[in-house]
Image 1 (cartoon, helix red, strand yellow):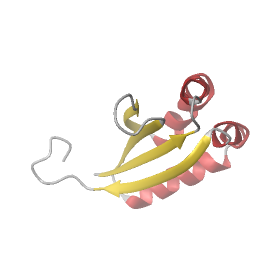
Image 2 (cartoon, rainbow, N blue to C red):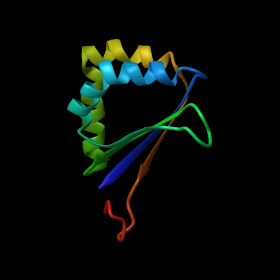
Image 3 (tube, rainbow, N blue to C red):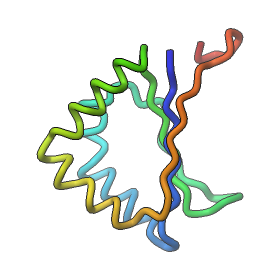
Image 4 (cartoon, rainbow, N blue to C red):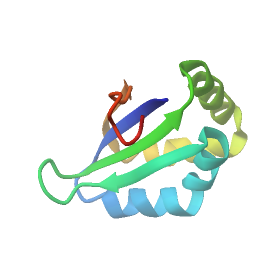
Length: 104
């Protein structure tokens, strides 16, 4: 299994607006195309204004296919600029669990 950990730094004060947009318009599309949502988080202590979401894929090819399908959807194309306007920075990491991890 591969885990994609996406970390977004949101404009100061915009976390509530970001979460509302995702809840009302985005998460259903993401789940439809991206599949296995492991978790969706926002920071309260430490670096603030961060959103972290984690998606699981059986392979990197599966991830690529799923993300490409999402990008082609007109509903996603209409939604993405709304959240992009609230972002300061984006980071995406692909992680593999250690053999003894509960997520292995």
